[in-house]
Length: 248
Length: 279
Image (cartoon, rainbow over all chains, first blue to last red; front, side, top):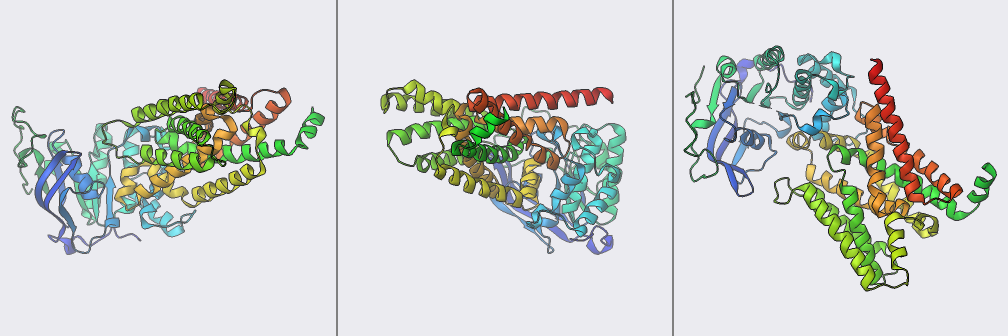
């Protein structure tokens, strides 16, 4: 539960952390990801790119355990636990107007550890403050979430994800809708975390940044899922970029 | 006026009304914050109509303790409405509207066809607007209300942080390992219990006011989830003032309480407005 962010990076290279085999994910009758095999290694900075509706977010939801696989499985390897994974979902409309202090939101990350106490102990509070410092939001601790700027909101949610994450961070479009300055700051924070040994999986539309920062890129446009009529009709023009799981 | 008040307070039914009124407005305001923030404001309305329909069924079946019918039906519908997956055909708001109107219609139909008293219109009006029911409470009603409210309050305090986590971000809570389905189920059951209780106080049609107004008022002024939840207790003051005014002025209890809630909302709205202009 204590700060495990400072893991020695060299000790983690190329151990598989997550293994998807024959993974099928979808909603209702629709399959969005079909029989997909993939491995995520410790120390990866993986960017997932692709056009809207191709299943990037669905895949991430699957990895986060929010969506249960319809078939196949996601294995946590190398002794990775569910509660060592931090998840930054896309911000919802309801959250934009939510009366909550930054502190309350960040501390809520610990609820997965099944504690039933009406108060948070000092160890958890210290950890929360550390995560706020890592995302440069420590001065916003008492601020009201709905009054923050878009960039600040996103960094607070990153801090919350970080509280839950000890080894793996799943980020869903963390810079969408941010101004260039906030975007740059966000990337800098994520880079710093990666250098400290955190494995990063990020869904993004920012291909330029993905090629610049990522150690691996997964392009969902180039994946053809068999027997899947709901995604990627042929009439859609091919994507202008042809990156496929390249290593930078 | 004080004398008249003391005179009325000597009657047990007035004391019962005050006890029940305080407890119900406290419970409904606490859970109201969660419902409003989860965009389920209308659920109070829908469920109260279901409770009305259930009451009609209980009347037709001539059950002695109608809670035995009303509570299970309302809890079931609450679970069906609140714990469905987000990707079903009929969307949440449409489902609530459908159930709400349907239950109201069936309830009124049953009451008409199998009318037990000569004054159907009066019965319906009493159930919908709660014009007299809070002043005709029996000691058993009061004990039941105290026990159920105590359960609701203890559950809320115990699971306060979990409720906050899934209200703010259900997906994140699920990802970190919170048993979201269980807590959604718990919230649905608690809400159903509160609504059935609140029907005694303000009647089926005004129940959603008790759930929604305190949360909305508190959200104008306060900025953290904790302070909003605590401030929603203004609802207790509104209910007390409403009951006393209703007794003194002879107005219907339910609508007087809701009128007080509206006044509190306007005060909070203005406070916020003035504060923002000064900055």
